[in-house]
Image (cartoon, rainbow, N blue to C red; front, side):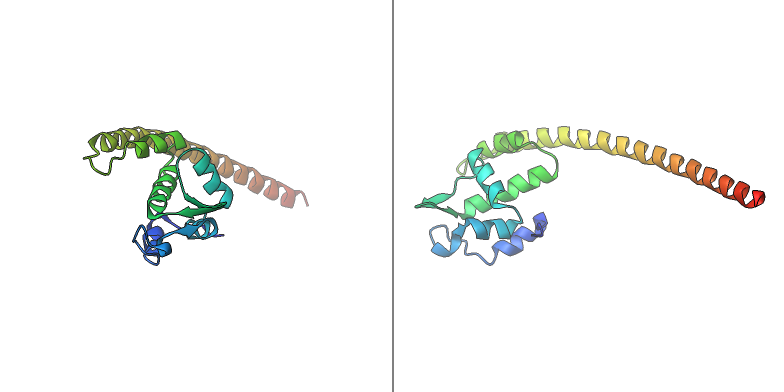
Length: 154
């Protein structure tokens, strides 16, 4: 199954009714997994961690618009390197009736720290790539020298 990019989710969701109480707005676990390019196991794991809380009809999980929005945030957070704990902390601060200033401040703080970590990782990767390029150039020179030596010996 091909994962969708974060920007693709909005288009996929437009096919689903936004009316919270409407049966069309509820997705079964298989449909939710397909929509977001995740496995059923992933959705169950996020539920076990308290990140998602689908409605239940018997043993069937039904995901609401709220669950879809939360999954978008989870996947975005994971994509940029946040831990699930960080994602949960930010999402748990959401208050539909409040200004969410605390949530926004925490998001900004965690984002700034993560950006710093990613920049350090980028610098380390750039250094490793430079070293690997130098090694490859040296190995190519050694191979070229040995090819010349082999042809001169023959």
